[in-house]
Amino acid sequence: MKSPASSLLLLLATTGAAKCGPADPATPKLTHLLTAKVTASEGVPIGDSIIGNRTAFPITGGTFTGLISGKLLPVGADFSIIRPNGKFSPDGIAVLQTDDGANILFRDQGYESKDGYIYGAVTFETGAEKYQWLNYVVAVSSAKVSTGASGADVGLEIYFLGPAGP
Image 1 (tube, rainbow, N blue to C red):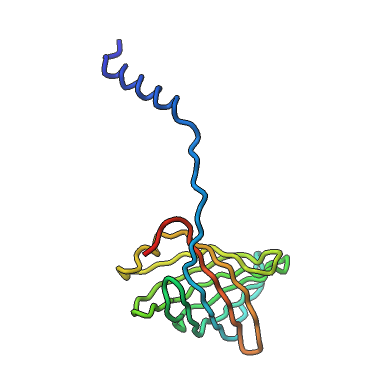
Image 2: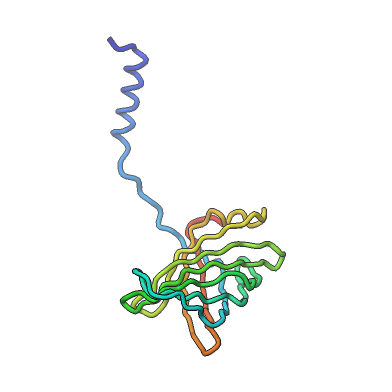
């Protein structure tokens, strides 16, 4: 025999469940985080693998402006891949240094789309108190690469989803 308390809990649980339907998720809002100009030196060939031809492009610097502003330190590289279908896939890691001296690790992985732009998923990591919120954002990038004899220049736009922010 069930106790009155367990019967009441069962009644409340089933009544609540009957009223609950599928959640209506919010449409994510994109907020512009920054615009970056990144410079990289001539590539270092890594070679062919099962996922494509990988080349490391050492990052030599750059600048970024927006909700956060500063420079890219000459640390890191884009370990990009040219896929068997000829499309470019970035696999970058760099250090952003804000105008107030905070260092933020930046990672960007993505794919070249049919329109020739490169779209990526971005993550950040920092111990700087002021920028802790970046550790938790869901961010996306849009990039365009121009190459020359001495390396590459990349124009990069980064947006984050949702209400996170400073």
